[in-house]
Image 1 (cartoon, rainbow, N blue to C red):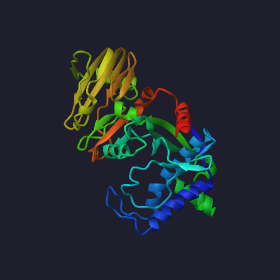
Image 2 (image 1 turned 120 degrees about the vertical axis):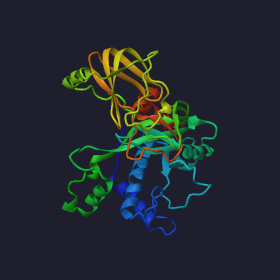
Image 3 (image 1 turned 45 degrees about the horizontal axis):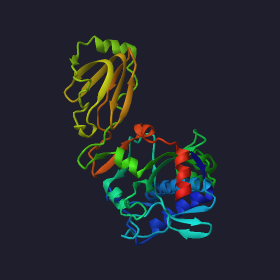
Image 4 (image 1 turned 135 degrees about the vertical axis):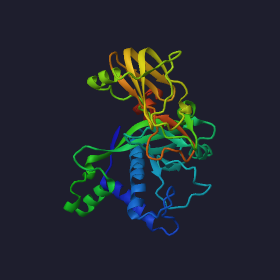
Amino acid sequence: MKIKLDKEKLFECVKFAVDYYLDERKSNTNRTTGQNRGLGSVINDFVLGKFLEIGVAKAIESLNSSIKCELDFEIHALNQDNSSDPDVIMINENGKERRPKIFIEVKNISPNDRWVGLTQEQLNTIENNSIVDDDKDNLFLIYASLGTDNKDYDDDLLGIFLKSETKNDLFKKFSDISDVYCDIKYIISGRELIERGTKFNEGSYLYETEIIKEPIEKNKATKIRNLGLTIIKTKDFKLPIISRSNVGEFKEFEEFLYNGEIVLYLKKNEKSNRVYIDCKKDTTISNKVLGDFFLKTGEMYELFLDTAGRNPVLKRNNIWLANRRLSSIIKNNLEERLKSIAENI
């Protein structure tokens, strides 16, 4: 679902970041690295998030003409009174202000994001809010991203802002504000996250989710079959857990089950393992965390069980859903869910 925003809304987001940077009460160090943040870093940290919040609020309002969603654009320190506030902090209904009846958390999502969800600390904080309390159906995570109608131009919001304000040719390769939009991708309820999500605790790993990629090119597959590699025997139609880079136990994933007919080859090197799946009959590999993978007769695939990123060790406790599995978990469509939120918030 795409929601267009205007120059005034982008200016409001940049103004918030600048006010935050200049506020003497606020620390300008990065909470993760401890490094000092300049104005550019603060703008990067805040503008996109605020821009998406405005887009989500506008989408909700478009489905209920009697309400206005108020967002938090105040500069204030986190405390017990506001640390568990939702992104939509107030509803103006027919001219009267009231607290929202649904807790909305807006999250940025990119095509490369493997997992969605919350840290356990975030979830605990949200659960302390009276809107959620014991009813996880009152919590929704709304995942959105920045999109553009003109793919030939850069969609960095700071560049777009400077282009619109300065009219300088230096910024001509950035999109026009009229071309960008907030694109709502998924809406996940708190109940879905808690009941269907998986806990990945501190000290575990960030894992890849696309463990079966495109089929291997035919000529290369033929060579692999003729290498005389070790054939891995399976039992009870379960795939073995063999880490590609010898890092990670994959204990959170539990079993990988398959139906069909496959032959598994192992190519073992000093620092890595390669597992190839030779598909003899159409096969489905199923896992409760990652979902289903479909393999076609006559194709060969690599089993890519591995960690993601340069430093995959997790620093926090998390509860996550695999991005690739969301469409099978979320039963009603996005528009229906957003309309329900608009009617009940």
